[in-house]
Length: 272
Image (cartoon, rainbow, N blue to C red):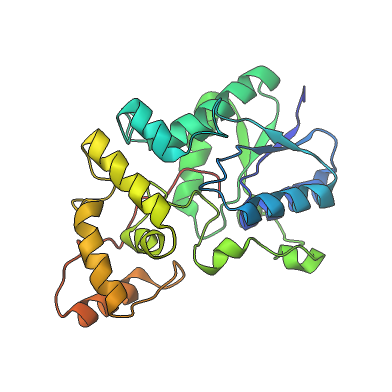
């Protein structure tokens, strides 16, 4: 689309879907772009793809894709293994930079060179630090940004109100990001260990090739033995459980503290 007016960073998650609906209701669909980065189906659940398509159909605007050249054959692990690094020089997760940031910036340069559009994100009023950071980044690039879930009077709180159920991945995870997120916590990775052994094994291979750990101080190989003990003890969780509560249960079940504290994982810069 040329001359976009309203660009929604449309991740496939519930928050970005609500933003897309709010923007369409306030401004209409003329010049509205639902900008998505399609992610390999091995790590982006089919129900996320279902959800983002159904919401786009409801709004009446097709999804616009700004994809990594090999998104359909490479996931976040392939990308970091190719680069032999988990992060770029400024500390940003390399997978985010290659799979999302670069395609996003290329799309903006090609379709909004005069920087006239407003870019919308799904951060809410509890995410002031993320909002401030994103405002600064976009402003430094010459773009306006807005955050309807934080600042607008709301017209919809859940897509279930329009007959579209959020992705079923929210049963386990807080976000609709990649399964096996390289900026996620040990709680997330315990869920990966329990439910997606294929992703777990690929992540271990990435650590072996690159020579660094994904998470603070403890490689997945070491965590695997601990997670096996946790599984044997019958420990279950979701990302909706407070990590302090979860790791307190871990300590009690194992009778000792074997996991390096992971209460404050760095927030992912992927679209939410």
